[in-house]
Length: 221
Ligand code: DX5
Ligand code: ZN
Image (cartoon, rainbow, N blue to C red; front, top):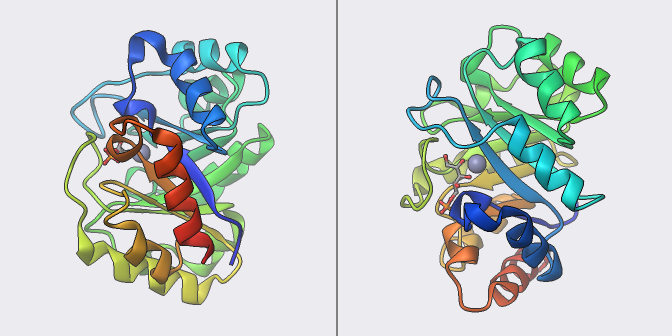
């Protein structure tokens, strides 16, 4: 299985001090920072876009911004792919429910030197990720809550999809996102997830570095 990566979701951070919050997570042992981009169309909320991501990447050279694109029409290259690439995005993870041509979109993302991720919402079966899509993508994201906001309850029924994808793709990065924390990491790790997103569980902790270490060691053992 690929290496364990912890990607704290900054949605649960103090947005007024976003760069400092990201630095605090990296110091605490996080490899990636999970940036939830919501457009008010694919999901009802609006969070942040390229201008904010750009400030963060300029403030933290080398940061790996794991951009979770909860947006309609993620394939409109000028609207999203180019903007996120210019802002310093490292991973462009779009929802398969939002596009008709995931393969072309993955190619556009790669042309801009970003990694490409493909996300599935709770009601989307793992079979929506065909072998062709998975081969082209760098990462698969299994949502364990409905996309749209942080702090929701982990949906156990999504876990079998992680196991199905891990069985089909032993070497692929497989991310879980939503309601993940010390109480739910065990089933995610057992199912074969290696990229762990956690917002509330990390930012809400007195010692985030302890939670990061606990999540990481559970995946590694
Ligand atoms: C939900 C977002 C998640 C969320 C995770 O739409 O994609 O990344 O911020 O937050 P927690 O860990 O609090 O569920
Ligand atoms: Zn997310």
